[in-house]
Length: 332
Ligand code: TRP
Ligand code: SF4
Image (cartoon, rainbow, N blue to C red; front, side, top):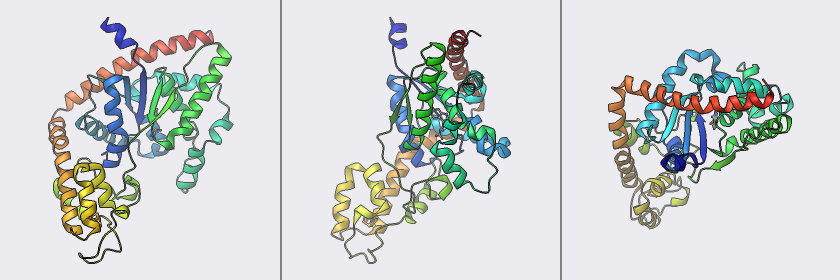
């Protein structure tokens, strides 16, 4: 019975390129969502270390370290290896086999017209990314997803074109070989975009982020540097919380007091220094258990390896079953 219940669960797959230490934007945007989903779905969450090489092939030696940092943040933030399957993409070779087979049926034009491909070529101008693997990025992602016959994929809006390619490829495979690879749905997160301390989107590349592992003093210092209402020069000028980055943080991390603080701001009943102190205190409070957990995990490298090996065993089993069906459908 228990087995039946667990096999009727829907399957969720998502991955993240190993970007090293995660920041609060990653936490609010993806991790919170992943954490909730692990409670009711069969979740496969992986470190997309091969994807990291599509643009970062010259820094291949950095991938293992960044993967480790990301795993530490995943576990400290509450991804639970008892609930979700956590693994490294590069350790489940079926991703590569499916990528290769799907490459046979994927028109190059589908990849060339992908908006993320065109955008990255523009943005990373000067970087040598005329490599075949970079063009194939969305197809490798399709293989990641289809290898588990996923029902849904939690992603950010920027990833929707890749989900579209995944569905198109699945459809083409099914048409050619009479098989049924399910077409996955995108699950857009319900969490808001988090601004960085300069009020642009929080991002590693803007250097405006608060890392999940930043110690309290760093958090305080970064919150002090946050952009507030630029028209509020003196403490007795009324402020406009709706244009203030600190206020966004109050709304997200201090919902119980946010409204009251907003009112105090509008009536010049509180100054920005005090308001920031409250925001910093809330963040520090929220992150304390994560830091504690991270500190413990950092001392257990063998446990981290064990989590991944166990995940790779479970993921491999599922992916092998899919690949057997795929080879069967193709008559290989
Ligand atoms: N491209 C995704 C990103 O940059 C990472 C990724 C790789 C992924 N494979 C995936 C996400 C499969 C979801 C499913 O965020
Ligand atoms: Fe922003 Fe708070 Fe200052 Fe108002 S009091 S402008 S909400 S930092």
